Every structure is written in C-alpha cells, then in structure tokens.
Length: 136
Image (cartoon, rainbow, N blue to C red; front, top):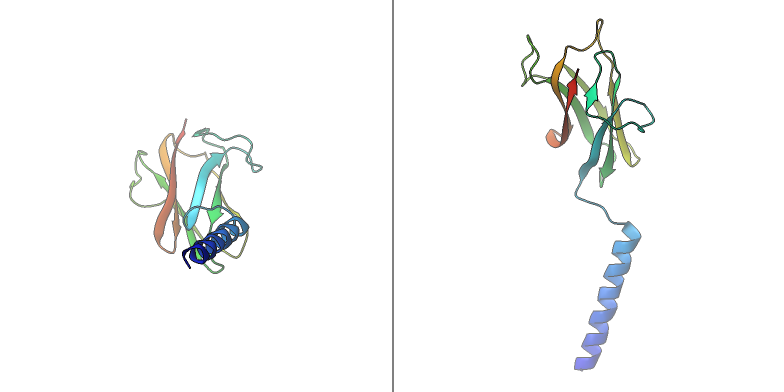
C-alpha cells in the first residue's frame, strides 16, 4: 500500500512539474525589466537624456489578463515650478495581449527642463514599476 502511494505522489508531482513547464516561468502579475531608451527599437538603454530627446519606455508584461488598465505617469522631481508628486503627463490604456508594454514622451517646445525625473507604471491603480532618469 505504501509503495502505491509513493507512485501516485510521484505521478502527481510529475504532472505539476509538466504543467509549470508548459505555462512557462513568470514572475508575479505586473511588469518587470522596465527600462528607458533613446530609440524606439530599444537598443540604446540609458538613464540620461538631452532636453529634446524622445524618451521611450519598455517593460515585460507578466501574467496580465486582457482588459487590465495601465497608466504611465511622468514626474519632474526637482524642476522649478513642478510639483514632484503630481505627474506632468499621463497616458492610460487597456492591455489586450502581448508580452511587452511600451510608452513614450516627446519634449515640449524648447525641450524638457534639466533635472531629475521619474516614470511610474500603475496597473489597476497600483504601482508595479518605476524608473528615475535625468535630463541634462
């Protein structure tokens, strides 16, 4: 009897392992590997930009259901005349499918003021990633 329980337990553990492999390894629901780039293709990962650069954000999406709400918020942390707790630009969208999240922001007339900035990614109202960067 004891031997048959071990065999059954071994089979169940094997099935669980097979299911996990088939589903693929992934982290908790949200985003990971959030990074900023100077180019749309995502080949020039940086944390410092010129005032007139377009800033591209890319992140991996993990275990996110279709219909999930995302919000990308851009903050100026130490720029004269800007409240560091209030985003100066926000984009909202609904996730449908895919493994990546993309966003971008273009400079205003005259470019971004120099200083430190932060971009924050919220999923259904909860912060799931952020990255600081500088404009020089």
